[in-house]
Image (cartoon, rainbow, N blue to C red; front, side):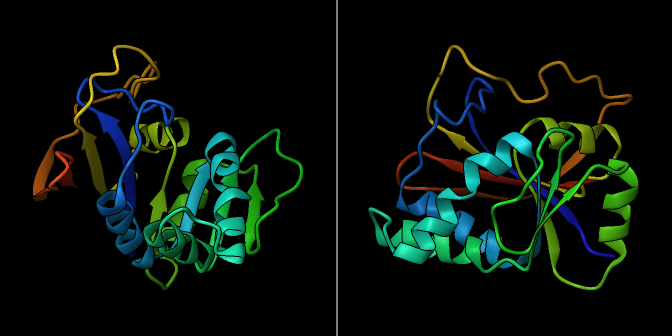
Amino acid sequence: MRNLIFAINITIDGCCDHTKVNGDEEILDYFTRLIRDVDVLVYGRKAYQLMVPFWPDVARNRSGQTKAMNEFARAFDSVNKIIVFSQSLNKAQGKNTKILRANLGDEILKLKQEEGKNILAGGVTLPSQLMQLGLVDEYQFVVHPVLAGEGRRLLEGTNLQQTLKLKLAESRSFGSGYVALRYLKQ
């Protein structure tokens, strides 16, 4: 069975609003390596619309401001399948993108049982639902050396039925002050 990984950028005070964090070359390299190890991306509508068509356009046009942006875009664009769980999205823009309206838990369990590389979930709302269902196997938090003071918080409005115990599997500090933390579900 393959693993479901949740990865996100987050500030020291728990803010995961994409407008409050901005990575550098090292962070983009980190996420490029991560995305190369998956063959399915899972998003809700909001996260999907932040990623597509932006990154596929950067990949196609090589229009990133840096080499790291272009590398991430190419890695993103080469993922085999993107699954978007949405009740309101009518049409997908990306190649290999499928919109699902079915039961989230059942569909993720099916994906986990298929052959292939790991599955990567992004965004906030959908991963929070996956955490509630106990389906996330690995958590990767890239902590930005920022106190945002405002903005959307991770797990905001989410009630976990039980405390999730995690085991630190890896930590990595970057020269710019960012810290990547990788946890496994116990």
